[in-house]
Each structure stands twice: as C-alpha cells, then as structure tokens.
Image (tube, rainbow, N blue to C red; front, side, top):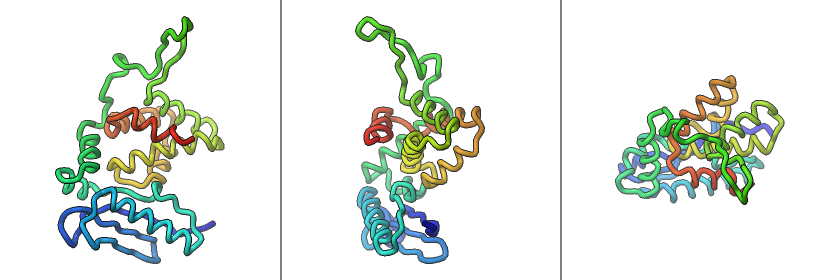
Length: 206
C-alpha cells in the first residue's frame, strides 16, 4: 500500500518550556502537535504511539511507531536533568565519541571458550550486530536478518541518532562492506551503553 511519509518528533514542549510534546507530520497532508501538558518521555512516546495507531485504523495504513518516532537533541538536552528516561539516553550519547569505546584487541567480538569440555565460539553483542549486518548485505531477501537489523536502527533512533529507524536503515544499506562495518562499530561506540539491553531489544522477540 502506498502511504504518505510520516515522521513523529518527540520535542521540547514549547507551551511550557520543559517536558515533551509530540509532533506528528504527514508530509503534505497534516501536522499535529500534542502539547496539552509537559509530558515525560514515556508519556509523550505513548501518546504518539496511540495517535499513530489511530491513523492506521482510520486510514488503513500500517505505520510501525518505532520506525517513525525520533527524539530531538534539543528535547534531550532540556529534559535530561528532570526525566529519568531522558537522563539515561543522554548518558548513552555522552559516553560515546564516535569511536570504539573498547578496543577490539581487549574485548574481541568473537572468542573461543570451553563449554562442557568443548571449544565453543562466543559472540559479543556487537559481534552479533556485525554478523546480522553482513547477512543483510549478502542476502537482501533475508527477511529475518533485515527485521533484526531494523531493531538496531530503532534502538539508535531512540537514543538520539537524529533520524527515524527507516532512514537509518536506508543510510546503512547504501554503504559498502568496509564502510558498513566501520559505521556499526562507530554507532555502537557512540550510542550503546548497555549491551544486554540492546541484545534483549534486538533478539528478545524474534
């Protein structure tokens, strides 16, 4: 089904000067702001999800909320001292520098260990992301790998990357092998603080 481009922004609430508002933009059709109170991040996100689901029901569209919602840097900076979820996201962002936080030589993405007397290969979370990214490049029709990689892009979008998950996925898809590997390593170093949380988000509901 052809459906218009839709992006939803979690922004600094302009009416109150703090908290969040939701701005739903359907290109060329509508722009709606939800700002009746200075919402927390979770409240604003939930409100936007409800609005998107209403649009889907009324118009017969199939927008996936996590793929079209992003958080603005202005809102993160303004709310990080008073909103727990925002503070966590800001911490994730501020700890990274666009480079690997931990060098590969100290914490490899794949290593061997003994399990019940047998040598087994173990993957770090970053290693798993790299492998899934490689699987998508090698076989664009691999729907399971694409779905998992989209979850990584959703995770980046929720942590202040500045684009929707679909746009991040498209950005990655345009890169060659070496550039894609470097991009995953750089984004992992900059935006991922809790690898267990990421693993649960990407692989917990396959």
